[in-house]
Length: 293
Ligand code: DX5
Ligand code: ZN
Image (cartoon, rainbow, N blue to C red; front, side, top):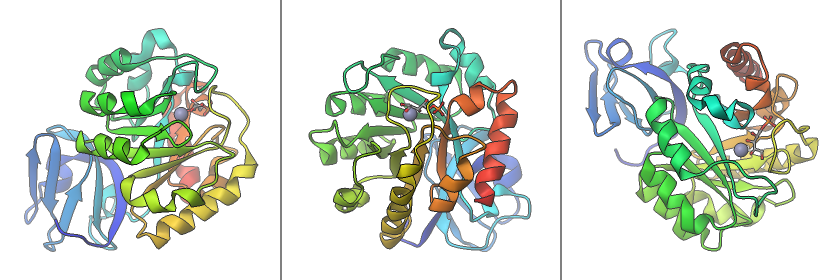
């Protein structure tokens, strides 16, 4: 697949139902899928999917395509990534299963150095990978991401995000993440400006703008970050619009629309999902609100 105008689309894809119609070819090779639409439009699925029903994230030439009601045909790419930081750590597999409609599961790795909190590391991520088909969005809030990030990608995480404030060799580390088959993310704390990282946009698949100071779930959304989300959206669009723009921290039914309106397209939500009696319904509600934004 050569360079082309891309727009990100995501959703649950049933390989037979969504891609197996006459005129389509669905091909699964080592966990990635390539397919061709009825109008001979090339489609490229970027995230690992399994056989049968799987989660796919795809880029395709802009506009058109897809059948009515089929999320493959939509041009708006809202993704919801529930943060298991707000789940019961003794029941992580159940927490993952509670949100089958989520696009990702957000996994907060904290080392008690980069942030004043300690959570989990690679062994737990390896176990979670076996316990859920939902791709893992690993957010590394650790002091030495250059040393540890590639291992998360090699283990099979769908995305690995490192903090700009912590990485000493971000370009090398982002390239290693990609080389290991994961989407490479770069995170910025609320007080870190985005403009100095414009030249790195070609090295990343996702920019994460923290909308709280990292370290804890359940904090209040920081409106002060909204202008930066807008500026990041402008920079990303200027560079072709390929990079996903994620927000993390205090994202809820009350705040998600303003994030979407400012230009975010991937939404992490911990408390708003796992603090809800029905986490899957919370995911649906957040998605609907973000799509309005
Ligand atoms: C905070 C973490 C977030 C956290 C978000 O440092 O990076 O992912 O889980 O939790 P809520 O959505 O509750 O603010
Ligand atoms: Zn996070």
